Amino acid sequence: MTNLSRRQFIFTSTAAAATSILANACSSGNSNSSTTGEQAPSAAPAANVSTAANAPKVETTKAKLGFIPLTDAAPLIIAKEKGFFAKYGMTDVEVIKQKSWPVTRDNLKIGSSGDGIDGAHILSPMPYLMTINDKVPMYLLARLNTNGQAISVANKLKDFKVGLESKALKEAADKAKADKKSMKMAITFPGGTHDLWMRYWLAAGGINPDQDVVLEPVPPPQMVANMKVGTVDAFCVGEPWNAQLVSQKLGYTALVTGELWKDHPEKAFAMRKDWVDKNPNAAQALLMAVLEAQQWCDKAENKEEMCKICADRKYFNVAAADILERSKGNIDYGDGRTEKNFANSMKFWADNASYPYKSHDTWFLTEDIRWGYLPKDTKVKEIVDQVNREDLWKKAAQAINVPAAEIPTSSSRGVETFFDGVKFDPEKPEEYLNSLKIKKV
Image (cartoon, rainbow, N blue to C red; front, top):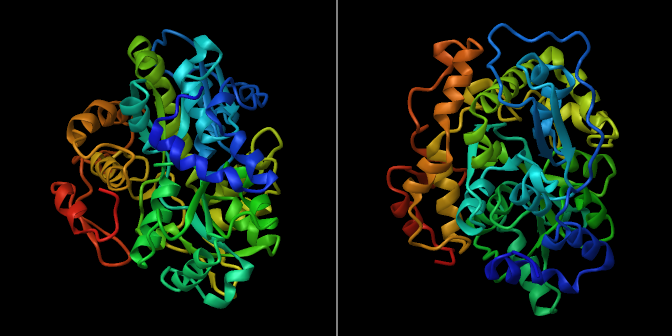
């Protein structure tokens, strides 16, 4: 039997009536299919990489890191391909493709000693859900990016002209319910970032995500295929899958998530607590490499090379063109709207994108409480202080000579404002939670 919580089981069981392609998509993310996912061959370290003078004296040169084919996995891929891991003494790092977020979770639970993984590119709430629900203590070491996700809808919904506001979908959702054909919205993992963006967007428009529509967990690489056969009516996922949907003329982007919340936190680099505690120097070396890769990825002159590397069959297996334009901040929404040099496109390093603010993790946990993924009495501050290792981020940043001006001095980015005017004060999460009209708690 799976290790899903009863709450997660109830959530994922809504997919039972889906067509065969969705059933296949969901089964690839089922807890029973743990093992190692797709063990894509890791690239050999970059040629002629010598160990840097500031490299820590590592306890091990080996680490297994997982990733999902999404543009925000680029820092791990680039750290491998450009030799940053090797530069800091981690010469035997494997960067391993995972089939889905549940598979990533399961492989982290068993660790590399059980033929799983030690760390991963991961949805920011997942290290907390694993620590609390799965009793597998995790450390969140860095934020991998801000922004860069989107909510896309099928062409058949174009007449509703849905965009940043979701309320135009209420009529369609009500009609589908009346016809006993629920509108289906795909997300990538219950309680993960894409689930929370979709839920926030729907609820802001007066649509109850647990009553008015059905949310379906689907692995990111299978989102477009599901839209193509009509299994889902909308989805929330990272790139390049929204851009690919547009390029295949199967749907359009209603909004990019930077519009929902300016410079919102997204993916994280997380590792098992026991691995980091056993190998503190190796963990620092990995973190140094990831931070340097984030700096590299954020430079305009490196975007094309980054996209070509990530597009390779062993990583994303897509056309580089599907990744490039949105990586540059050029967005074709697919419904006639376009943006050039969009200010809230994906950032890996700029504007403290890499820093793991505890205030952001406080929001994620508050939202997971809002939707019933965590109990209302969750000790939010206590668990954030346990999982979030901003201290290790600062140590790694100082070790690679990040200027002091680029190292935040506060654990909080302050009060956050969402597109609908709602504000989140990380010092008063209960006040925020109580103010929300649509919620489970």
